Image (tube, rainbow, N blue to C red):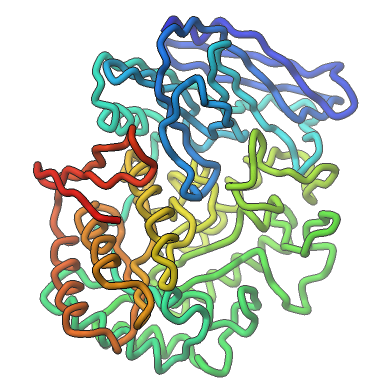
Length: 499
């Protein structure tokens, strides 16, 4: 495929017309920086198009805005009518071509690739409106193209992802343990968390690296919302963290920082989107102070891991699986600070969390994938698995593990989500396959269960935790044939799963 990164056409879309918007580029080798400057104009989108000559019917895989939703797969170019956020890889199984943007960019970038060429849509909006740059010159993104003269698609994509992220932050040790959501689903208590912790410590007693017990949505006063203060079933959260540590685990906790029902939070502090619930606007100085205080309070209680959730949906009005070429489907709204792009706002929000969290580990769930790299240690790369529905675990968990595994340790640690164990729901013959796959994957391993599990499950969990704390070679094999790979290579051996 002939491709010249410097040879493209451009289209500028502004709110109210284009009079002074200027696009500039700086190309060096296989990279090109894209700059935007506007004084009076309010830019919304920049579209770039590269004409290419493609004869063969390539197979194409893209990425996702935030989590994936069981929908990642290779498609023939002739059927590839989708928008692909951040990057894509195309292959004829003999050679590979990768094109995308570096992580941490100041815009939301998606691609379309067909026989007419490659189109990149660069979303520079503020909310659903044009951004007020006020004469500022902003580097929107850095495009990176790479060609590989081999058909080793997984290895090539791993290498390419490494070129996209200059500054990943990775945990010092392997992160594993328990999360109570997928068996409790919000019904829990101080006593139940202590019971869960005792089981977790029993199952990992011979492992020097200590596990995390992560308290999910259940501990705060309002369901799935702040204020981030304990309810009556939990009481003293510092005492709980201390007791988790005394038992032999490390305490972690879940929050949803932009959904808060505290009466002190005035309507002026909230995003104004017609027909939507109100969420906190992280561009407002008072909101920033409030979020920082929430995190510092939780850190002061002694929690060592912070899982923050829902921020993409809360910021932009929908989940990534429902979005196409842009990050929001809702028009005619804006943030309190109108001078920054949506991507800049997300980056500032994640930086605030990272700064306030200090030495806590951070898990981003429903966080923007490409913008969280370098600002979270772990990213939930797929939508929720389940302790109730096996099809959901199979479709979402296995899919995201296979098709986003190349990002693992390149952007962050990829969390394909939990093994959810509820008595008499998912047959253990199915769930133990998911446990087995995760234990060899070199990605975080979280299990959600209480102490009513049987001896066979206990034995399998003990074994899985030990396997997880060793290093393994691991990759999916039948990635061209299905979106739920059944064949995997583990430590040089081909393993087939019966999903």
